[in-house]
Length: 342
Image (cartoon, rainbow, N blue to C red; front, side, top):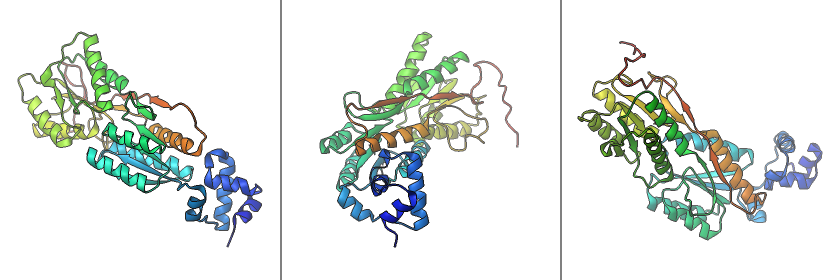
């Protein structure tokens, strides 16, 4: 059976360098790590994880608590975190909260009991973050942050993305724009609505209260709300959905009513929807830098755990991009999009 000394000898590095690669990978260059892991594979060397955890008092495990595993945005984000963590030889434990604050607190207790080295949290409630902070365990907030809670955090500039999407619709002549949003308590929801509101106010366009709809980020509620909106006397000419699940509900409602996109109503969504590349017409959406959100979260928390990152907390704000498709048309003009007839 190969030993750590065999690995060091074949890789032409010190035993200490091999040990650091296993226990503190952030302190070893990527080139050296790659060489050492290649040699480990060649020799069939498998470090004793339990023994390492006892010696280091670390488990090389991160806890991930996220709010909705059905949401494709969070699924894609988790894959990015997993890939980044794997490169630094950290394992993950995943918990889903279904946007339930009580379940979220329960998951926090579970993570603390599992002796994870750190937690990546997409919170529903501030209390969850406070409980982790009281435990003094390293953690980072992703996507949803709290201005009055000091912590590492990574998020998208939700305000800028919503402002750009709304300004695009206004530029097409739309003034009756309905928004499908959440309850107005989560950071992304608040910031996206603020971006929508400011874009409307800048052009002195009134916002009608009946066009600001709380759909709880749920597909079913978005279906019901969109049906009601499109059957009303003050029917909107455009919809701005604040997440992909609500967008799916809205699209189902539009089709159920026998309307088309964009002839019946224009629609913009925050985050791409599943199969957007083959969706007809192609959707216009605000694209978040999902890969960067995952990579930055993993990098910052692991550097904090390993002692590479010390002192002041980091607050990373990443820029989104508006991807223009065919789901919007100028208000009052004939659509340039011709749907395929079956």
